Amino acid sequence: MKVLFLACLSPKSGNCTTAERIRSHIESAGHTCELRDASEFQSSAEVANLVAQNPPFEGAVAIHLFKAGRLLLDIQVPFGVIFGGTDINEDVKVEQKRVVMEQVLLKARFAVAFTEKLKEEAEVFLIDPVFTVEVEAVAKRTAGVFLAQERSQQELHAAMKRCFAVVNSSVSEGMSAAILEAMDLGVPVVARDIPGNAAVVQHEVTGLLYSSPQEFVHQSQRLLSDRELRERVVRNGKLYVEENHGLKQEEESYQRLLETLY
View 1: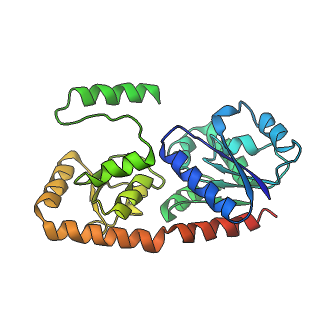
View 2: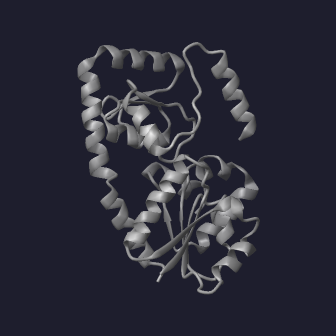
View 3: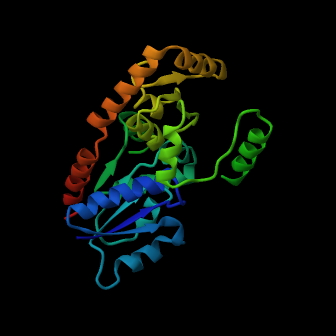
């Protein structure tokens, strides 16, 4: 099967890493997979023309119901979608976007949610540059905080292994690849207590959760002073990833889903 895979491919981003991993799963099943950046296309008609080229695509997959999924609405081949996180946590709050995402779900042959909580949110609600400037300004005036540029996965992993802990301060997450990578690398995780993070970080078992700046400081101090706690969350975190997010398991799941496109 020749499969078109659409995703938001900002260089060295979590989405890009996830898309590359899923593409490898598709290809390892014997399919041909062409990964394209959703930002290349202005309309669903452009994607429909691409799909119909000779030799034509026989199926499609998209990450993020609005940014990529909407581009599949006019294609004449079966497709599946993967929730990106921000589509369900943020875009669904905008009426025009929600209507489009509902249309995508109705046409999709399958839909993948990285966590049970994300799946539940989707069931309930369906069936930027300014922010960057704000972050840079805060980082410049905050002692001990440094803003790093995007890094390749190899560079990022090397940096993570040199750190005492990895912090996830997102206010919205689908499934944080950074958290799972840190766990797999044996680095403790301190994460904001939001549904996407709490779905993979069990407090004091696989990592530490916090809900306020004061609690973040408290949990970080515990991690620094309590060696037994640190060793426990590292050990359990790595075990959790091995048992629930192994590449082999993920590969087999996507291969089964692709069979539904035949």
